[in-house]
Image: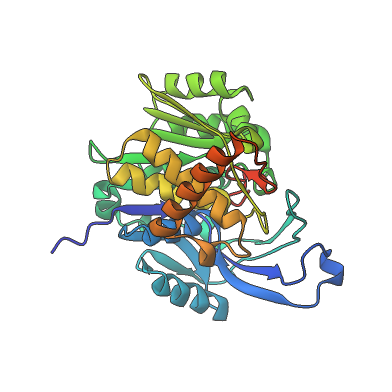
Length: 339
């Protein structure tokens, strides 16, 4: 039996410590819940929830938190064979504050992050070449040797497979943020799909306007451009098709991770050859579900949960047409995957 992966993600991993007290600053938080996190890792977990065979290329320290990462990945059905233990570096930790519906400050503790130390020699080039989808991130381009490794990972992809660039703009990871557009351009040259919010597309192609950004991304050579617009919904465009979806109202708990849920569902739709509209509907609903939950990786929904929300929101929309008004907050794939 072939052990080829449906989805391989490259990028950061972390141990997330999220406060159990909502609406409280970190100085006053009493207790935290511990979760697996990191954008690329969350996307791999989300893909596994959809039945994809997934793995993540990342790095951890030789420490108890690195052991936790490996155990958590396996528990979620994500292969950890491409997780590298980097000597002398510690597994990153991320804390946040939770102020629903739209304020979720993140605090990254990742000096000398192991995922940014990965080299070309750490890559399983054959697995990357033949995977249905390889998912890379903008933060992976923020420092060497990770940026060279990221670009090398997608240099020899088999024709027919998708390479997704999650623009994933984290300016604090860059020694010189002004270098980012040039490195994004090099990554876009290998990508077939690009995904980002308005801040991210502005860094990549110089405009925050969703329509103009989508056109510029297509001009760079991707076949599908996805621009997440927060309360304005999501835009997806190819050379022949355009989909615009409104956000799904939910009671927001923690918007962190919603974008990664969107990403994992997007990858599942691409891998399964689903129509673009169905793919976007699933991704949009996945993001909304996670926004209504506390965690990131642990919160990733199944397709059954997603379809239930889609059906429920369709019914609510029908009711609104005859006078009912939703009270929940509209959410469309907010940060860590937030926007």
